[in-house]
Length: 167
Image (cartoon, rainbow, N blue to C red; front, top):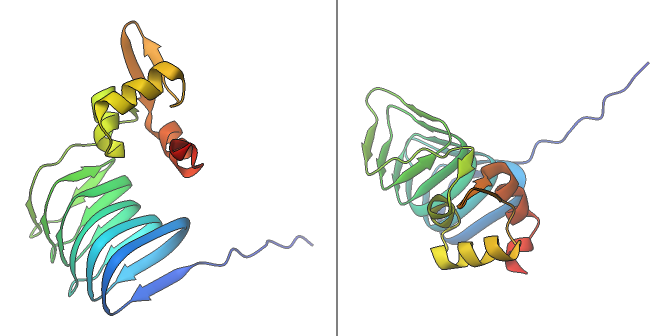
């Protein structure tokens, strides 16, 4: 008889008013039902409830928005904007689903599997000179096609998660 190890699901349900920076290195299921202001970086799933008000720059894997969000949103896997949502700010999703009735005021730039240096600079929120210095010294994972650098987004995500960006 085979036994499967049950993976414990990490769930965090926030129904409060918070301010600051929240950063998760491990995957969680985070649900915000109150107010949040600051910066938010998650792994796993983030849900912003329909009564929530969030003023934050958000980076995450799967993001579902049902409330009001103001700020820059980067969804590395999927961004879903529900009919009750109002989003003000620029969004950078790998995949996007906007329901009828949702409001989006801002720009949308889809994330691609491969990024050029300018896209990588925006993705990592660093200046282009740093990207080029890292690429030419071999610090950042990428490859050159002719005279142009190309960076695989998944390799970049692993590189950032490993902490090598800070070295």
